[in-house]
Length: 368
Image 1 (tube, rainbow, N blue to C red):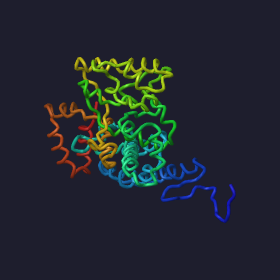
Image 2: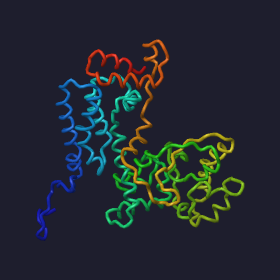
Image 3: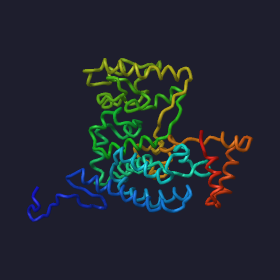
């Protein structure tokens, strides 16, 4: 590419635009947006490592001076999984050289037996998930024209926003959209709360396509259902396929679908996947699934503007481990409830720099 074209200067190197480096060389852009910042993060943690800090103090440094350097890049771009793992190693190495407590326990709030440690993967996903309501709700804007086009190429908002795919390999349609928008949709689905389905009426409301609940095996791998010709004919929920006897109605489906080239194979797959769930709820068995709790009631596709903090709590809840009270009970030779645990932590927190108290609390936090 020429350095000047029609009087306009063109740079071969990445340039900073609104705080993020952009350019034709994706490798160099990634280095400046992520790798350079990870190096700076490592330097900050190394400087603070020389000081005598408590676990709670180290956690505070990680959040305020460490992770804060990555927030902007994490909001507007994606980080490779190996670099997320690298960041995690840096954070926990700063916390202590060798893990003494399960990381899932550390994610708890101090009052619940943890130290309020941050899970970096869940934090990045929470930042990504907040883009969905901006893209969907701002109908008069022009900046979101491209993501809205990609989203609607998969399905209508009413269908897409109720899907629950969380792994790219399971839902092949994600290959047709850019990496960042894939991450946005996956993060949004991870933030959805789980519910239990015990009645047929609840099952009828479930979206069939891109639903983790309805997966089938294809070439020895798990795949989620997705038939564009069925979606085009408004066959999207389980209830759309059932007849008056609450069984899958072949005639109803055959008459509704316009493109019938693969209809018999598709109907066979649908029956193999859905029939076990229909039978399960008919005998009052409970099925756990994800639902979209972020939609305004009776106003689709308007979304509530949830903040990253609440999204983070939903995502990280799957990784949190409740602390074991076995060590407490052995130490005190009596049953210890959570209220007593909170009382001990709140009393000792102000004197945490006392070495003896620190060692005692570490013993209490040890998880078998």
